[in-house]
Length: 164
Ligand SMILES: [Zn+2]
Image (cartoon, rainbow, N blue to C red; front, side, top):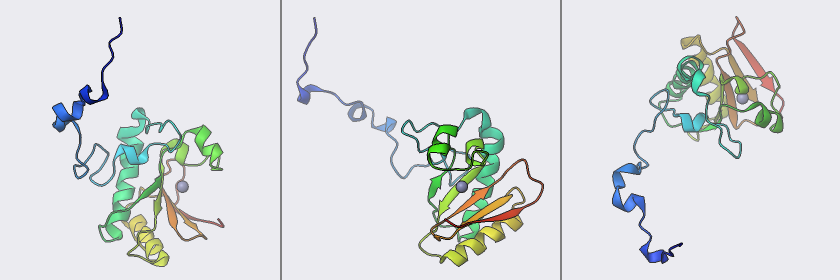
């Protein structure tokens, strides 16, 4: 027999065990101090996580590139617009089929409000000089974000400019 519970009698786990609920100011688990796996998860409806089998190598590599960019931007918070993308979500977003996001080696970062787009791009180039693992930087005509990747399959660093 099914028992009915009045709404006011429902006990919420967070009331009993508040320590289980992570306060917003506590660092969550991620590959580096300012980047966490939630931010790198695919933005598909299921929020497909960054693949576990890639975390120690390419995830850590991507995080080193991201941290280098963050430092060059004055050590201020940056917003990740896109990290890992499943092949399906990448296609739905119009991303390149052999692009870096489905490989877990790319991140798109929003221009922070304290920098002009030119300053942001310059910071990305300084980061690329200091962190050789950064292999690709993408600059958009719309001027609101950049693409940074740590591609494993290209010997030379490169700049791509997208007319988007
Ligand atoms: Zn990108």
